[in-house]
Length: 94
Image (cartoon, rainbow, N blue to C red; front, side):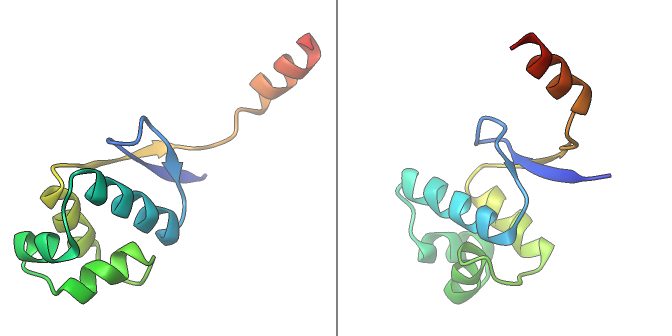
């Protein structure tokens, strides 16, 4: 069974890697006009740790959750399995 994480700010884009999470986090931080230092101040973690998150580095889940909260964001775990029946029906219709 495969699960992905859909970030509530991303119109339900499903992300599977730490790098994808980091890129999405950075885009959202910048869209809000916030700096790495702003997020570090809000979370109590070092600026370098937030930079590691954005680079897809190995940071703890507690860091991810605090950083998302600092953006006023959340996450949702979603079922990301491929619906093979829908693919077969769609390709048969075309």
